[in-house]
Each structure stands twice: as structure tokens, then as C-alpha cells.
Image (cartoon, rainbow, N blue to C red; front, side, top):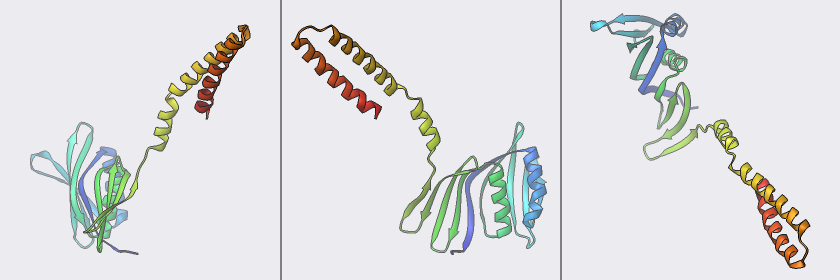
Length: 195
């Protein structure tokens, strides 16, 4: 199995409430990471995650209403820091691109609201799509709500009933032949739509 060399967060955005931020700061210790909040000039804040070896990652925070917004681009090598940022990214339903870098190739994960939407394997010579999220349930629901076919079937059913009534009233063989032809065409369409 290939060993990951690094993880890159490219143009990622995290949104968290104060409660989520506090929960993360309390849980980061279990990842062997020491978190602290640093107040910057101008009143800004950043989370600093530092592992036992002294390596650190800085996560800038901007307060917008009741949310903290973190726009992040960084490269992580340390497994403890990588794990801590990954947990924060998933918990805060992050958006952006996460590159997992291996010897000879990179796996690019495209996230929306904390869920993987697409995975691509990128080498120096090619890019190959590995996975792409398809909202199958939503697509099926949309198709189910389309009523055009049902309306056409209902109209054809009414036409068939009309021509059957007309056939019962017909007196000449020519009238019956014309009506039978119309019934044949209408029932053929009806069966095709029902299938």
C-alpha cells in the first residue's frame, strides 16, 4: 500500500460556530496536538495547532455574525496535524480541494459541505476520474415528479374510450375499419408509454 507523503488543503473554506470551535479545541488533544487561539493585531484570531515535535499549522479565523470562517491553504506532513485538520474539516463540513500526495501520484478530493463529490488520480502524464458523486435519489425524485408521461397516458386512455364508444355506434363496415385503425394506433402508443 502506498504511503502518503503529504496532504495539501487548497483553497478550502471551513465554517464553524463558537460551540464547534470549542468542541474541536477540546478534542484536538486526543490527536496528540496542542491547540491554542491566538489573537492577532486588528482583533483577528487564528487557531494554532502544534504537535509534540513543535511543528505547527495556523488556521486564520474571521468572524462573520455567529460563524467563524477559516480560509485555508496549507501542506501538512505530520500525521498528527493531518489527522487534526482532517477532523476539523469534516466536522465543519468544509469546501475545497484536498490533495493526498503519494510517491508518483496525487489523489485530489473535491469536497462540498464536508462530503466528497469527486476524486481524481493525477500523475505527471494524466488525470483519471476515480469517483464522482451523483445525486441518484434526487434525480429519481425529479423524474418521479415529471407527470408528462402520465398525462399523455391519461389522454390516450380517454381517446381509446371515445373510439370504442364510436365503434359501438358505427353501422357500416367502412366506419368500423377506420375506427379500428385509429384504435390500433392509439393502443400501440398507450402500450409503449405504459412500458
